[in-house]
Image (cartoon, rainbow, N blue to C red; front, side):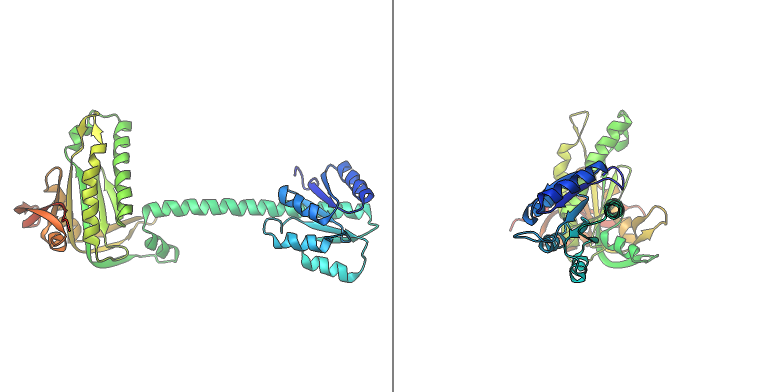
Length: 354
């Protein structure tokens, strides 16, 4: 439809002369016109083509106008197509029935051509407004879904839902979670000769793979910091197997590093650290949201990584106690940990065979 006064109109009438006269008049007004000689043909045409308006006769053989109108208004794809009934029936009962069934207008034959033209123009304008509104609502839904995806890239689903429900301060305590930090060994000298694009391409590929692993194991990525990656198991929805899930991700990280090489042949090496304990988790910021963790557990997990060795997964005694029945470990022994003093640590080797 080019303007509110021009449209694609279907004329339905079993009388050929009536059809031709009405079509000629409509085409002179700038409309494009299609013709149907009975109700069944009309339904087939409106299902196959897009019409802006249907001019519908009532008295037709086999399928009358009432039945056509009923079928159209029951069909979600057709119910918004406006229908003007033009009939020789001038009984008020027929008028009321058609309006109740969803017809926009009802004109009796012989009709006033000026009145019909006005009714057609009004119907086409209303349809155009409805189409514009529908297009606006569809675009609004697309934007809403895009915003939802962006929000869920920043916040866990349960936390995003709470913010949308009006909570202004979100801070939760968790008695036991497992935190993992992973960091590239010797990243500064490795990255020095790289172009900015190459560096970002490498980190994006690496951390995107980690994101997929976190999703696979039902873990919550917290953030990346330069070349470091932080993930946690057991929040925002508590789970009893948080340590096992994080251990599986740590082992998967090691198995994926062969995909990423520097200068085509130098494999990436990573230190991975894990610790289990209580944390506080919450949302900070009002313009740029961030979901973060606080507490000694986070500090200790970070120390397990920074005091670890390349290509090894170092865990605290607390994490070891959670996993020792199902996983293989190598005891590293007692090491001096910054800010923590002496700690007994272990290297996670793999899962025990059953």
